[in-house]
Length: 289
Image (cartoon, helix red, strand yellow):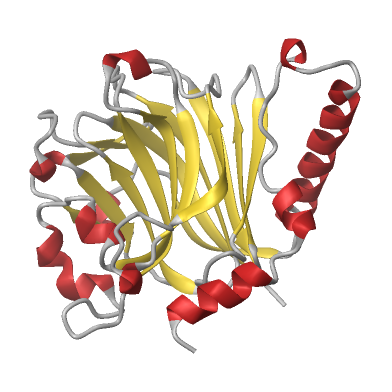
């Protein structure tokens, strides 16, 4: 069965229950009726409990990088303009300073590839003051599997010396989570979002049809200089992300059952032009039997 037919088949049988429980958005009490508020609180609690149950599974750490040693031990880079600097506070990744110049994007990839269910944990501290553009976590990335874009993305790394976004979503199978993310106009300042996608390179439709249902807006997270603990888990047909700082925490959840599954690949950290952040105690774990 080809990927297009696989998408249609999986979508037809996606249970309504999964659709109803995808992403639990933070909602203020003023936005809800009295009847809605207890139900929403119960749903959020249930989502948090589900995440904790998954997070406390039998995970075995297979990669750890404090961020203070030589980054080249664990990472490879796409892009000729950005930079990585190891500091006592962690690995400082900076994209190039010139907005709207695709050569100024920057991506670092794990040298190691992973398979099966994965758990990714790290401390993220934003260091830019940008009001536009995004950070992206790539989960389980491989090439589309053609002669030009083989499964191992490092076989065609030179193609990404200019890390244009299209070079990724047009040619890779990967889960994508954008966060500390903003639009492209001044009106989008402080209107951040968290969003997930599953790239579909063989469909030849760019980003069309890649969204996993459940965007979240105006999260209140990711202020410059504030450390955030981030945990991302891909397990079965679910993708989870927990973000926490000293003031708040939130669990985000997406079903991946609407798209063909991805079970192996590298993990990447993307900064669009002008964006930068420090990463500390980056770890990847896989689920043991």
